[in-house]
Image (tube, rainbow, N blue to C red; front, side):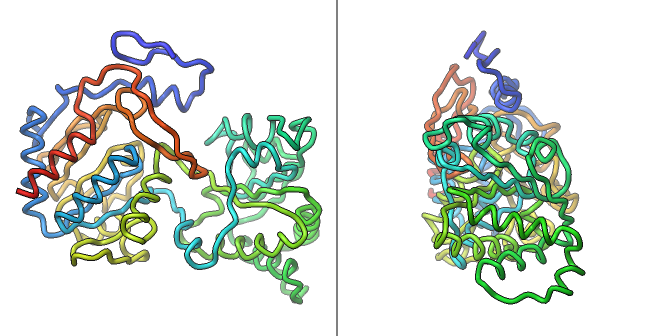
Length: 404
């Protein structure tokens, strides 16, 4: 790691994703803003505390952009102010928490994939583009304890629409989004030994029925299989149904072999944020704390839905690239209500109703804990001195001022 004048200027070995995060310009105290006007951090914290105290239904989201220690304090702040928490990614749909509570799901660490998986199925994902180190270090190319020859010991299958990953797979099953549920029902029926209407199956899946059946046989014969999922599989319009069906398929397979489901989640700490909120409230992803006890509404309680429906009158968020992908109705509402934005990088002009408080960047000028996409907690170190307050200091100050 190379640092110059308080900035990270180089990483070895280089990774385009980590380099973009580590080397992006840091927000400084000079970027602090209250309603479009420059302000000190103390003034911004005072203004933010007033917003939260006066709000009837404040919303807290974007929590995956900060450390797990900060998320714990945000839960306390939401409880103190009667707010609503949403720890899920605003634009990435991941129903894992609900499926774990309903159907159950067999999962694994990236290390298990590396050392055990001789059959890897990429379904609706493109790790070569979104998670390049996944292919290189964990799922396909590396050698492992039980995979001594690396790529030569693995059979790799791609399912879904063609992309950079499927082009490098040994086998590719072209599956349209409309065929996904039918394919999952067929797999569940095969593994549970239930009869299928062959005419209906052919009508739904066409010429891929034979290839899908062959994949089922390969999975049963594998020493250890892993099915890696991405956005093409986890579709918001279908809710948790696809993941529940896949979980029902994988579980009985353990009578013959071993395997797991792994999900390519976005970073930095969306997995950790969800875990903290679940451990504190008992509910996966988020909860409303306005009635003095946690209340769960998974179908209507996401940040995007609450903003779009105008059901919150203030918001506090940790900024990230996802801000540019929010639906227009949610962005419109954020511009209409008092919004407190904590960020280590400025995300464009600050409106008259917004407060921007710069924070130290986790893993660059702030310490803490983050969770990898497979739920493994990782420590963060501070590489350069911070020119702004840490998120933990700011949230602690808000806790103290809103309790007065």
